Length: 162
Image 1 (cartoon, helix red, strand yellow):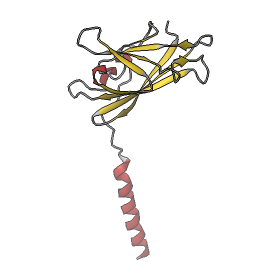
Image 2 (tube, helix red, strand yellow; image 1 turned 30 degrees about the vertical axis):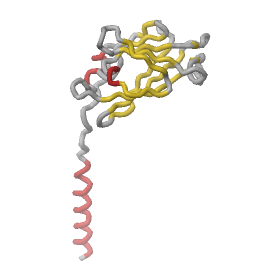
Image 3 (cartoon, one colour; image 1 turned 45 degrees about the vertical axis):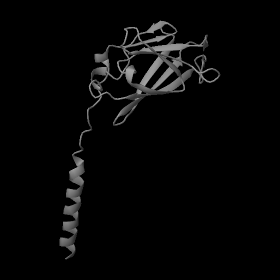
Image 4 (cartoon, helix red, strand yellow; image 1 turned 60 degrees about the vertical axis):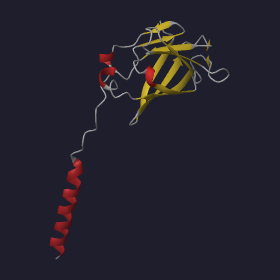
């Protein structure tokens, strides 16, 4: 059983990059985790450009395919994951470059396939169980209604006062 909760938040979607905030929260009231490690499997780790406030090492379990990364805390900064209180979490942001051939927000692609904390498997839902993110925003129908009403109100005002 995974002793922590991992929150993988797609924070920003830029033109050539996308940003993720990862938070590990300790759910165990009886244990601190010192020198912890977090392993995540995601198909875009080969395009990781920057990781903030964690140490990182790419793992290549399949030879040249880099889809797995190991993260751990920086000594004297966030290498101790305290008990489940207000200090019971560590977090970092990851910046990925977009590969036009593979990048998508469809069908849970933006979320990790597997996560391990200190070697324990943290169960992740299958990719099709994630909510689908929209491709684009929907236009509001009210955007044309407001100018139309304004023009008619101004016309009615002038007709009454002329």
